[in-house]
Length: 302
Image (cartoon, one colour):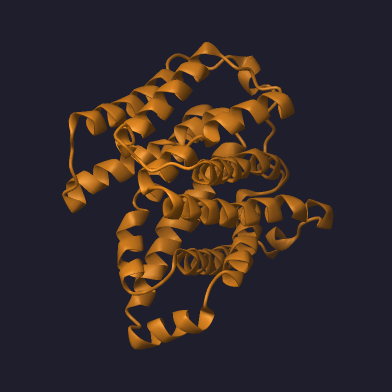
């Protein structure tokens, strides 16, 4: 039962992340940099989680000092994958960056096998190959694209840090309530993003057009607080490699949104790629997981 709920939680989180472009387009057009958008998103997320903690149980704020490295790794890792993702776009193209970013399930699968002794099954490998091929087709990188060794390295590093969230996140969810882990992850991400942001510029833009605050509230609630809580809860009940593969449905949702909301092209290769990602989810969930696949999962500590 928990496995089915965890799968639905991952898919729901990916769907919400896939809708980020709705908010990013508006905030970018208003003059906010990518890191400033992430900072605003994390600030709203932190405030929302703080309200939940104060209403539910203030004890959720308590963490062991020796465990802070996990939240720092997750939060700063989120900032770093954004940084290298942006750098890859600058050095190459957005389509290349998104494909390299979604090499993350490969890193997660390898590290999870070594660290958590997760089994590498034929079904996982098939789903991984299908999702990566689907991302390539949706991004449209089969034509001539600019690619340099530096751009390629930046994209891969971004993929590694993107995957590191899932790896370390699984450890965090085994020890803490998802609300606690998400709050401190957001806090570290917010702090590191503010270092790369122009707070004065953000303030001037918001003062000029206060209505933009509504868009920050939207991206903070629907593309940070809710999906991260959902994803983090699922990590306590699912293998990290499986969660990482399922999360690539974000590309499917983002691609569909581009087609239906923004009138982007829906060529046969893009549609085939979206179908491959969807099919990978089906393959990954055919039949029942064996008890061994979940024997090492522990419930999060209260």
